[in-house]
Image (cartoon, rainbow, N blue to C red; front, side, top):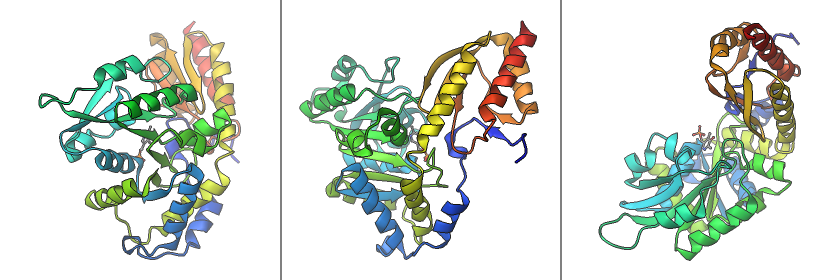
Length: 341
Ligand SMILES: *Cc1c(COP(=O)(O)O)cnc(C)c1O
């Protein structure tokens, strides 16, 4: 292997299917899933439902669509969902709930640990009155910015949602990371929620694919919305096979991504001009002093390391980071810092 292999720290979505995963895809039995005929999709949906401890699951081409179908299954036109200001389902999904679902988001500020303060949630729930949108759903995200939500907090938020008659949704794009980091099963992470969206295309290394899990009634509604949103796929068993492969082989190894993130964060801690603001699961957030920004961008580029350089940076570790990737990254950061001093 070349010592100058690309180190892509932009996201864990850049992971590519391994040869073994590709072989599983090539050999997958398939059928027309819109007709309910694809055995690999069925196998994935039942495996994921079982693993998540829910009765039903539905395969989606993306997490954005899985989240949106969930919001549309829980809420009707004129309803609203309470969500974090920085949450993917509010900030990074093109306003889909409003655009396509006629559902109003009620964003609230996160605490530093990514949680939504219970008092703020309570204050955001609107009385039943023609002046107000009908508050129907509380949506959390775990992990959020790499941080694992405290299970006791999730429990309390769920109790609050239930007591107010709200449904409770989790954007669990990286819930697998939360489970591995916390030594919990995915079912334990999912248990407090009515619906959970789980992604295979992040650190698990599948090319595409997400599953929504929940009750059969909710999944039946989501199936209808998936069709409306253009997410009905035909021989999608080829994709489901990649996710099944990931489910069987790529979950426990997320611990290696977390270990790389810790090593990177520890190394960055000692570097002048860099402040690590957060490091959890597979992500490291840092502040870069202004004079270092330009030299850092060109040094990283010169070293074949991909990262979005900005005053507040995010570095993401994953299974396709080459062996010496963390050390090469630290070398570049230290060299730039020394030159700036
Ligand atoms: C990636 C991601 C999603 C879904 O993204 P897609 O690219 O549509 O699969 C949803 N939520 C979070 C937190 C994510 O990181």
